[in-house]
Length: 158
Ligand code: SME
Image (cartoon, rainbow, N blue to C red; front, top):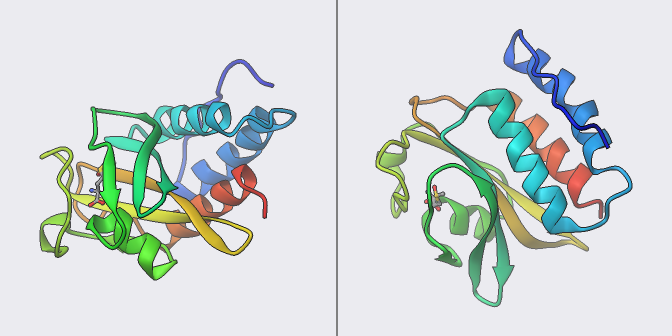
């Protein structure tokens, strides 16, 4: 695996296009999911400097905090609760422009203004989510949804 991340300048799309091959190289040959989730969180944080980026993993009826980068976060989120539990229930990516307007949003950090949550699928079921928070309102778009879904699929091939 590569030992340093080459951070990419340019549009959001160009940043993802430069980052994704590096993420593929980073996780290639390593099948430990915790190690890979940890490095992917670090790579996304280093490239985009988002407030919080990390994973929650399904355990029975809850999501439990996994590898992440950013401030400390709540450890358990119930199915259907918050943006994370809602993305799990809906089985699709949720983009929230203003977290204060999302019913039931769980404020792990008062600095968070917008959020994207991408469900992680294995064998057709949701096994976790990738959650990203930004201090800027309406920071995430369909571009982020598309590329973050691609990154999640690299990590968790079906
Ligand atoms: N805001 C999330 C909780 C997790 S933290 O943002 C890290 C939610 O509403 O599910």
